[in-house]
Amino acid sequence: MSLKSRERKLGIYFFLPSGIVIVGIIIYPLLFSLVTSFTTYGFLNPF
Image (cartoon, rainbow, N blue to C red; front, side):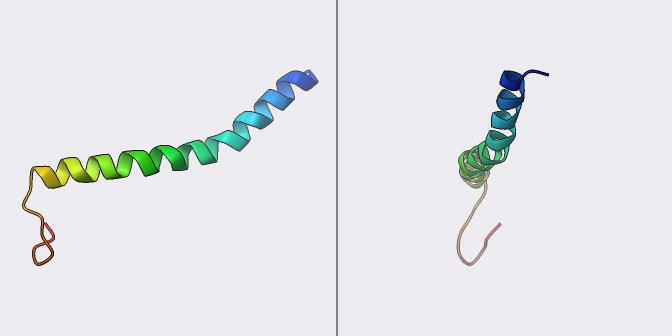
């Protein structure tokens, strides 16, 4: 395995956790707003 491929793999390993967190931060509000748009959601009746 060459140095270049090891550096590339290390870069991917560093990016994966942060990429997963970023995608989660983007997807969760979208899914939450989609679910609440089809249901009655309020402070007294959460779901």
